[in-house]
Image 1: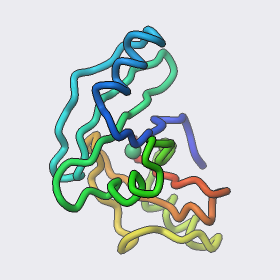
Image 2 (image 1 turned 90 degrees about the horizontal axis):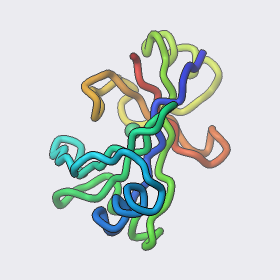
Image 3 (image 1 turned 45 degrees about the horizontal axis):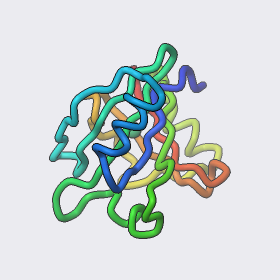
Image 4 (image 1 turned 180 degrees about the horizontal axis):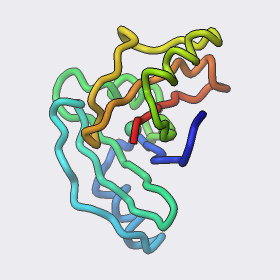
Length: 134
Ligand code: CO
């Protein structure tokens, strides 16, 4: 059902410092910070030949990653995103398997302008999983 790894998202307390680790130390192609107020994050995209890394920093008062950073002050892997062809079919199949879908179970438009769902980490070996229809 799942296809390519679309991205790995890492929550970071210091966006410029994290961007410089990828740009300078690791020699990756790194974007300028992009504010995504609808999602409560500022994101730096790291482009790798086979996938992307997204560095996430809280934006605004109710950022969905603030709680994660409170628990993990030095930052950490926040979620992984897999591509799917049909998000509603995927959702229905996952639900039938007993997987918990976060939120109201309806796809939302994600940070890339495409429909996404988040799946409960306890159903996926302790990892928050995002599925994105591409
Ligand atoms: Co994501």
